[in-house]
Length: 489
Image 1: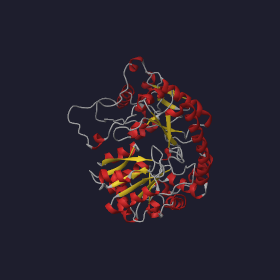
Image 2 (image 1 turned 90 degrees about the horizontal axis):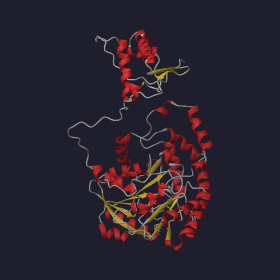
Image 3 (image 1 turned 135 degrees about the vertical axis):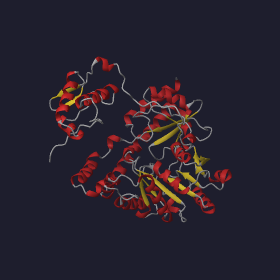
Image 4 (image 1 turned 45 degrees about the horizontal axis):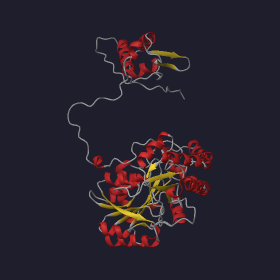
C-alpha cells in the first residue's frame, strides 16, 4: 500500500482569476500563517507534490513558493523529515505575537441562564497535583497494565468492521451481561443486562437521570455535606436542592421529611457517605424507601467505591432491598481501575428503560465502544475480581497507616471520620479556615480538599478530605508531618 503523508494540509485559497501569480499567492498565504502563529515552529509541511495535487495546480508554482520560503528562512528542509516551519524565524517575524483567540466583537453576546445558577465552590482556585492527599487518585503503579495491554492487543490484532461504527446506545451487550452478574453477586443489586446503561461516569449518569426524572424547579434531597459536583449537575438541570443533614446513621430521613416532604427525588451515598464516610443504617434505609413509596419520589443511589471495605463485609446495596422499583443505582470504574477510562453504569427500573434510551440517544448517541469490549473480557476472565482483592489489601494498609499517623501527629485536635471504607477519609479540626490552609499546603505540594466546600449551606465543620489511594505507605508519615507543620503556620 502506498505510503500516505502525515503532514497536515493548511487551508490555502487560490484565486486563479487574480493578477497575482499562483506561486506568490502560496508564498503569501504561508508567510501570513507563520507570522500570525497559525503555523508553529517545527510543524511539518506537505510535500510540493501533495500540495499541488490538493490545490489542483501545477507543481512548478508550488516549488517556486517553497524555494522562496526556504530562502527567507520561514521553512527549513530536514533530511528524512521533509519541510518544516523554521525553528528560527526571521527577526522581524519574531516580533509578532501568535494570534491566540479572536477578540469579541461589539454587540449582544447572549448566553443561557442555566450556567449562571452554578455556585463558585470553595477550593475552586486550588491547584491539583499528584500524591498526598488528592481525592480520587488510584494507585496507578498497581494497575494491571500487562493484562490490560494483552486484552487491548487482542482487539487490535483482530479488528472488526463494527468496531469503528456506532454501538448500542445502552452500551455493549457483553459488558452489560458481565456487569449484571457482578452486581447481583457482589452488590446484591436486582438487575438484568437490559436495565444497565453504560455511561462515561457517575456525573453523566446523574445528568441523564435528572433529564428523565426531574423538571425545572423539582426539589431534590441531597446529603449535607455532600458531593459538590453532583450539586452542580442538579442545579444545571434547574433543580432546587434541599440540604438534608447526615449523622452516624446516614441521611436523616425525618429531617428531610420535615424540610420538604414532597421532594421529587433524593440523592444518597448509603454504603459510604461522601465525604464523612458514614454507612446508612438498616432502619434509615427502610425509612427512605417507605418515604419514596408514599410520595412517589425517586432515589438515586451513588455507590461510588463500595468495593473497598476494611472492617467488615461489603454492605449490600439499597437498590437490592427496594421492592417498588424506586431506586436507580449508579456505579463507576473510576475508583477501581482509574478515572481516565471514563466508564460507569446506571441501573434503571424496567419501565423507565425506554425513556432513558430516548434521552441518551439525543445526548450523544451512545458510549465509546472499544474499551467496553476490553473491560467486558477483563471482568469475564476474572481479572477484575483479582484486581479488586489485591487493591483492597493495599488500600487497607494505607488507610490503617494514615489513621495511625493522624492520631500520632495531631492527637485529640483532630477527629477522623470515614476510615472504614473507600479511598479517602475526613479529618475535622477546630479553629481553622480549611480553604486558607489548603492554599498554603498546595504551595508545599500537599493537596488538601477543604471539607467546607462539600456544604451547600453554611459549613458546620472545618477540615479536610484526605485521599490515600495514590500514597505509598512509606510516604504517609512524612506527608502527615508536613500537614501538622502547615497547621502550625
